Image 1 (cartoon, helix red, strand yellow):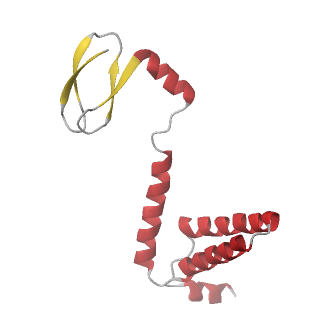
Image 2 (spheres, one colour):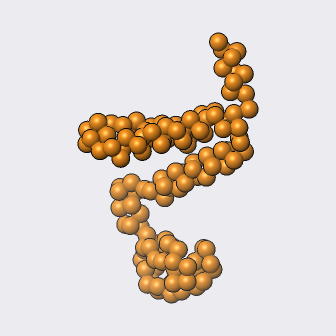
Image 3 (cartoon, helix red, strand yellow):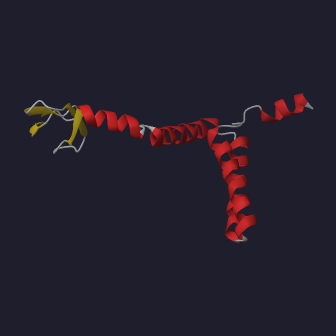
Length: 131
């Protein structure tokens, strides 16, 4: 049996992060359907299941890998830049934060330096602020 499955899955995409999330979403929608009794959740759960199986059984591996790479990049960007409340409080004791008037990038400068010229690290625009 193991040889049959290995031969069947040869040249196919297999499990990836997007397929796993699709199956998890299908389970969550199934639970919501059981609790709320809305048929919309029933059909959405089936669509998620079908999409997950489509991804696993797809022969277009390059395209599925690109989709999965975009998805994982998007997921990692959601968590990027998040700091804990304590870290934020500690940094506000020592630093002032300004946004660049040109590109709106967040710039951190030390507190208590008086009027200084701040150079934006993104666009190199200089502006004067009091810290």
